Amino acid sequence: MDENETYFDYISQSQPPAQQAGSEKGSGKGIFFAGLIAGLSGALLIMAICYLGVKIQNVAESRNAEQEEVTSFEEGSAIDASVVKKLQALENTINKYYYFEEAENDELQDGIYKGMLQALGDPYSEYYSAEELNDLMEQTEGIYYGIGAYVSLDTVTGLPKISSTMVGSPAEAADLRANDLIYEVDGTSTYGLTLTEAVSMIKGPEDTDVTLTIIREGEKEQLEFTITRKRVEAPTVNLTMMDETIAYIQITEFDEVSVDQFADALATARGSGMQGMILDLRGNPGGSLNAVTEMARMILPEGLIVYTEDKSGKRSEYTCDGKRQLEVPLVVLVDSNSASASEIMAGAIKDYGIGTLVGTTTFGKGIVQQIMPFRDGSAVKLTISAYYTPNGNNIHGIGIEPDVECEFDAEAYYGSEEHPDNQLEKAKEVLLEKMK
Image: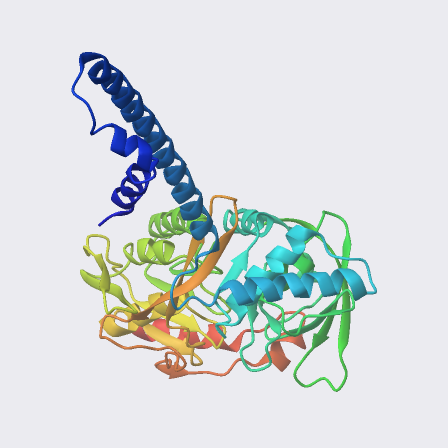
């Protein structure tokens, strides 16, 4: 029996006993019509009361449903009523006892979101506020205000480190070097910060100064650099023709702007009589999966470029039709700062045997992240899959070994105004042998 039926039964039984008995007596017309009118009135009254009762019940049920929707939590969720209650207790404690200036509500909220992502223990998954996401998008477009250095996260120390510096940048002029660990920015420790947080501290308005405290291998004490921020327009692909027949193409990052720049560099190199190519991926921290696959299609033979597998085992393949395969000998320079998208490119080249890798073992980042935006302008970057080279190799935590091992001679490079690059010279030697 449903609730409405129970309710109707209660109303019908609530009539006074005398009225119920009177309706059964007499058979005269007056009594009949009086009884009829009284019965109709009673029926209408009962219907009205019933209708009103149902409306009240429906409103009550609707309000209860809304309340349940607000206070209910998904089964197995980390967020439940006790967590919300504790967050409120933490906020009240901060408001009551915290000595320094209190954070704004939006700052506290961002801290909650960032903390949830940090709890994953994955240095590549993080939360972006709307402002941070906007800064990130500007950087991938190749224009921002900063010092002109590529920064990655050192997994051993947890500190941000310089992967490489841009040619002609303030960072290069200040003599920042690859593998320099950034210990402090303007006196604030970078330990425990996400890469995004550290980079946002380094960037800032044009013509303002930022002081970096650096830990450098071989130096007994920390080094301090005060650098003036400038507008940085970062061409991510640079072409130089060496010995007229060798095209040297350096890719510093795989951003969306890199695709057209790489296409232009290849076209210029071919038009300049290129007979061999050196592709320099040293210090390249990676970038967009879409960008690297588009660029790989400009030089690889027909077949797989890379494939990914997510947590459910779903496989996604990125392929090349081979119509623009590179027609000249190729050497690829790599080092311990060649990561992610760089390793996708280097791994495919090595698996197909169309180029020789020279340098040192790559970083070993074999996972893929995706940025997922929210309606309020914020976003989360999550590790969503692992990637594999065409031969099925998962290089995460391992890296890609070069075909020709060659350690970089930093002492010779930084100890001379000519900056002799022994790895580049080795690459030329290997390429010239291949060109014979």
